[in-house]
Amino acid sequence: MTVGQSGTSVKGGRNPIAAFLIGESRAIKEVRLQVAQVAPSDASVIVTGPSGSGKEMVARAIHAASQRADAAHVSVNCGAIPRELIESELFGHEKGSFTGAHAQHRGRFEEADGGTLFLDEIGDMPHDMQVKLLRVLEDRRVQRVGGRGVIPVDARIVSATHRDLDSAIDEKRFREDLFYRLAVFPIDLPSLAERREDVAPLIRHFLAQGQKNGADVRFNAAALDRLANHDWPGNVRELRNLVERAGILFPGETIGAEQVERMLLRRGRNSAAERAALWAATAEIPKPAPMGDVAPTADAPILTRDTPVALKTMLGDLERRYIEEALSLANGVVAEAARLLGLQRTTLIEKMRKYGVEVAA
Image 1 (cartoon, one colour):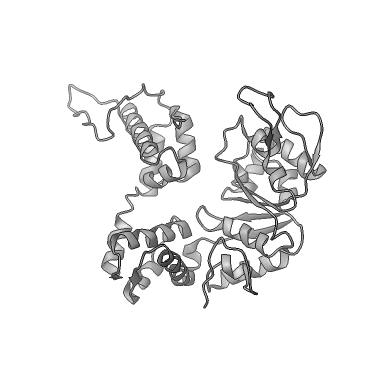
Image 2 (cartoon, rainbow, N blue to C red):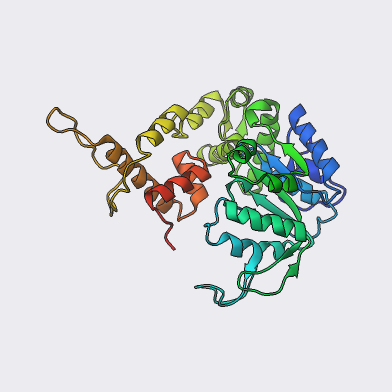
C-alpha cells in the first residue's frame, strides 16, 4: 500500500481520499467510500466519532476530493473559542463594535467563501450561537458584529463532534433543526480499537512523515503485534504521538515489544475510574485561593486522629496546581496541556472554568 502524506494537496492523479484516510480495515474502507460519494456535492456533512479518531482528516479528505479543492479549507474549533468571542470569530466584526475591536475583522465564514468550513466540536457550541448559526446556514449570508449590511457567503459546511448529539437534543442542549441542517450526510468514524488492522498502516505513515523530519526508527513484528492489541483510548492521535516519541527515545533503533511496553506505561494516565473519582471528589468544592509559586509536588498533610484532612479541598488544590503547571509547560496551549494531564481538551477547558484558571496572554 502506498502511503500518502496527510495535509498535502493532490497532484499527479493521486487519490486524495486515500492520502488522508490511511488504513486497510473494512471500517476505514467504508468511510472512504462514503467520502467519495459525498465529496462531489455541496451537501453538509457531520462526522461523529471519539476524540482523536481522525475526524478532521475526514473533513480534509472531503475538501480535497471536492470541486472546492483549490479554494480555502478553514477549520474552527467551536469548543476552544471563549463564549463571548465565538460570534465575532465566525461572522467577523466591525471596528469599534466592542471593547478591543480596533480594526475590522473578517470572520471564518468569509475566509471560507468558495471553499470548505470545518466546524470541529460543534456539540460544544453555546445554545444561543446555535440559533445564529442556523440562520446563516439557511440564508447563506453573514452580518458582522456591529455591522448593518449582510455579506453573502458560499462555504461548504463539514462539522464534527465526539458528543452524543441524540442525547444533547433530548436534553435541549442542541437544536434539532440545526442538527438536521448539518447532518444531510452523516459519517461515523470508528475508534482505532474497532479497526486494529489500521494500526500497522498508520505506523508506516507516521514513520514516513518522521523520516522526512530527520527521525529514523523502526518497529519489529513483536512491537507491531503489541501495538495492534493495545486499546488506544486516545485513538489515532495517541498512536501518532507514540510513534513521534519513539523517534525521540530510540533514534536509529529497531523497537521491540519491551520498548513499546515502556512507552505505553510512560503515558502517565490515571484509569477512567480514578479520573471519575477525582472529579466527583472535587465537584462541589469552593474555588481554591491562588497558589502562587507552590509546586504541584508540595508535601501533602499527614492524616492523624487529631489532624483531620479536608480531602476535597486538598484534591482541588492539587488538581488546580497541576492544571496551572501543565499550561505553563505547554506555553498556554490548551491542547498540549490536556495531553500532559491525560485529559480530553474539552474536559480540561471545563476544569479551567471550574477553578477560574486562565491562560496568560
